[in-house]
Image 1 (cartoon, helix red, strand yellow):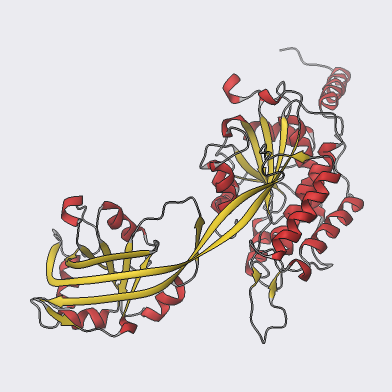
Image 2 (tube, helix red, strand yellow):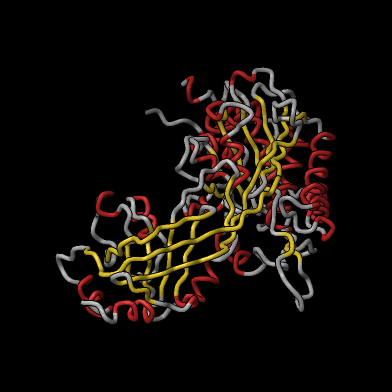
Length: 497
């Protein structure tokens, strides 16, 4: 291979630079944009003010939040993206809050009732009411043996607690057909501790079909009391469960178990806007950020009672809004560009799930989705991370755009530890290529410091110390990514490749 002269090398470099600049007009190294940072700070100060009450779904704080965002987006030139004449801009989402209400547990041996104190046993259900009557108890040890539906149907599976129960063993038994699961707590845990952890509101979409699963917990001492006059005590059962060749077997006990819940319906909304493209049939890209937070989250004598969510996620809404403002000033794109502010993220990614279940366009037409969450973390000029790296086909194109736009991407997959904690995960589960591209996760240690301090606390307020340099960088790069992915010539739809 012929070695090129220094002059030739310089000419080629200049030629390549010219070609890249033709594709990406603004390629100068990003400079700190104080005007943009001031705009972001103003959005955050408004959205995270006490007047918005912590942006809790179904409250006046929601109405104020959505009115503010809708006006910002309308003034920027966006149009409604619901594609539903009956619900302009605001897509209704119905949530159901379920709180455990009553718990009943009656045990019998040969028809004789055995009494336990209410503080020794707790029954829970995700449905309105679940009941099993006179069901035989089946000891399944540590749940290590697979049982058929016929073996479990109509029976209460009695399970020994594990060192770090995450509910997976109980869920597996219920899914396999057990009428109920009763977990015998170890000596270190009490019903009061389980109650504190489990007797909180659970939330679901109103469209979700909630099963009648029935799950219970009983203290070790109370269960030993139930076994006192039977053929085996608790110590014998525990030893048996550890032995090789363990086989589940019936106990000489039956039970009538019941649990109920109280339900509260919350009517809330996603906000959807769009910039119309010249060729909507070529697909669409999506930017999203969740608008909701926890409302009042502390009680007196605490001085500040509201979780304002300045970083989480007023900062994401600020970036989303400024991206919309800048993209709307660009020449009309070929693809539609949608902007989505979701409800119920803090309750389980429910607004994003509702969007995925009832989208304004077919999900398969979304070629790229960029979630924006808790971004006011990093200083200006820092590296970008991809939350969801390696999980979509977007990575090579993002890397190419980053290189051309003089942005550094971290190689680490560390940010993926948080992929299931953000709205992009709800879209990924529906095969939408969704990522977070942000400086906030460019330094995981800095992000985790936020998680350990202000995150989900009343101290997450608008204050001068909030770092907006990286958030402004996010705006710039997300706009550049939008220009790239909105162009079918640069990024063809996967179905057309």
